[in-house]
Length: 274
Image (cartoon, rainbow, N blue to C red; front, top):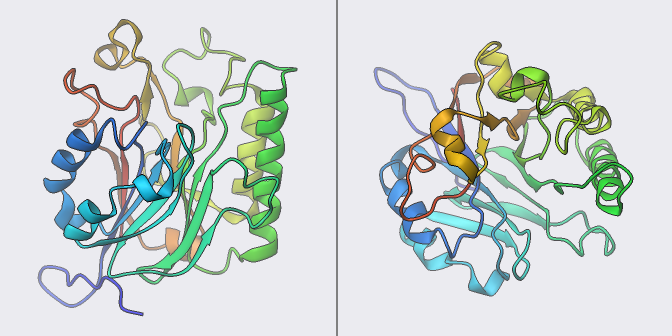
């Protein structure tokens, strides 16, 4: 397998940049997405995309290939859908959990790329406590934890990226009093995400930015992006061997802070491993 080896300025070595981005319909945001990507494409080696909202055959493979990416896509009409796009190719592509029931909703795709095991996840948003959607979200998290236990090891370099639809701590929302016990901040949701971290994953953003907000999602209502009324719902989670190479993590607000064309309600989260 060939993969990205980017020589660092001033000497030998490698650096890999990965990005997680809920695009909220790749077709609806295609112009904005590729305009943003063209300004960054030389330094993004792996893209993990969520909420594609299209079937695989409608995914813009050619546009990605023209920019040097190979893509593994697990798509669904109008809902969900995830993709990993990597420079230099990929292998061992896995679409879904491999379970017919849990793969009815297309929410997980994995592969080996750039020398890493990469998983891209779009966790269900859920619903109010007591609803079927709420129960499904918690079960989905439990199934994800079991999938990690059965197929991977925290001792190996693994990246789990995506929209997890949970703000893990009070500091991950703009107003913890107003947003207490709502969808995404319920204690059982937070415990479900923490359960995956407890398997052996490091929250890359918090590892380097213990006090910064790091919001990645803002409602379209009331100009929330301009008032920074957001939540941290997107994560780059990595095992300790990869966390030890973590150099930087940032939220790129540029594709979110605009009015036309209408952006995704999420902003991309980018990490560099060196």
